Picture 1 (tube, helix red, strand yellow):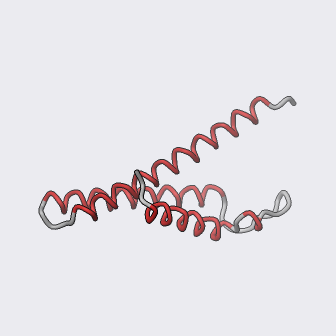
Picture 2 (cartoon, rainbow, N blue to C red):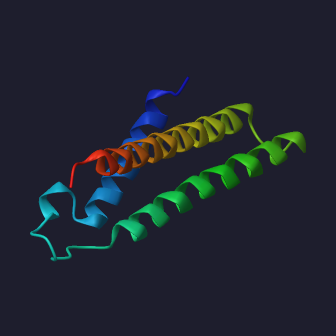
Length: 106
């Protein structure tokens, strides 16, 4: 189960991504571009998940070598779990939106 600190970090990361992308207030008319593309935001999110996974792996190896604290390992693994769960939720919503578009009458 994720701790409040892990959840706060996940929300802070999401807020940072939204600020970079222009947020909901940055959406303009069709054809206007405000901020980075959806692909750039998605790539940044993927890199964040990969970084969390690498940190978790490094902490696990350090603990196996006797150089890390158990709490650091648990925190790193929990952060990775939250990041992966968030990414899976976003993926599911994108697939659902795509399927909704396919079902629209022409």
